[in-house]
Length: 271
Image 1 (cartoon, rainbow, N blue to C red):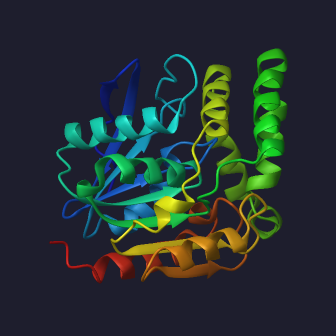
Image 2: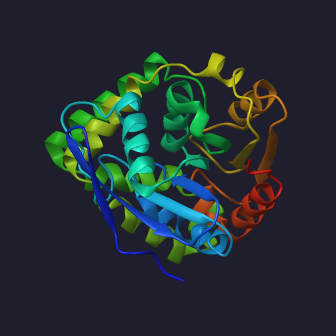
C-alpha cells in the first residue's frame, strides 16, 4: 500500500501537511523532533492492513510551516485537532514519539473525548529543567547564526542508537535525511516551544484510557526511569523496553514496534 496524496490544512498561522494510509479504526502517529512523518512510515504500512493511519508533519517539521513565534504545545494540540477534523477522525488511538508525546499530554488536557488510547514512545512527562531549557534556547540561537547542519549532525549522534549506527548505517542515514527537511525557522520555533512546555507529571494520573509505553534501551535523551515514571503513574499501562534502539525506537526497530502496537490495537474494544 502507499499513502494517499498529501493533504494540506491551515491551522492558525501555519499550513500543515498530513498523509493517510489504510482504512478502519483511526490511528494518529506523531513523529519526533527533528524529523517528519517518514519516521512512522514503516510502522504505518504494517498497521494499515487493519487500521486507518493518519500521519502528519508537525508544525515546523517536514512540509508543514512553523508559523510565527514559538511552536508551543498548545499550538501543536490545536493543530492536531484541526487535522483530526479535516481527516474525519472522530475517535482514535494516538501514538506520539518524543515531542509527539509532549503534544499528546496537552491534547489529552484539551480534547480527551477524542482519545481511545495512547502509545507513548521515547517521551517523558517532566518539563525541561533549567539546564536543558537553557541548552535548547542556546541551540536555537546557534542555528540562527550558523545554520542547521552542525546542529542536526549532533542530534543524529544523540537520537539514533549506537547499535543502529553501527549495524544499520542505512537506517541511520535515512533518519539523518529526514532531519534535513528542517528549516532554521522550524528548528528555532520547535526548540523554543519545547523549552516552554508545561510539566505533565500530574496529568499522567488523569489518563484513564489504555496506554502503551515504548522505550529504546539505548535512548540517550529519555531515561528508562522516565518511562517507568509514566508506567507507574498511568493506571493499567503497559511498558515495553525495546533492545538495541535509541530515541528513534519506532524507526530503528520498526518490525518489533509494529508488532507490539498492532497487538495493543487489536486488544482494544474501539467503542
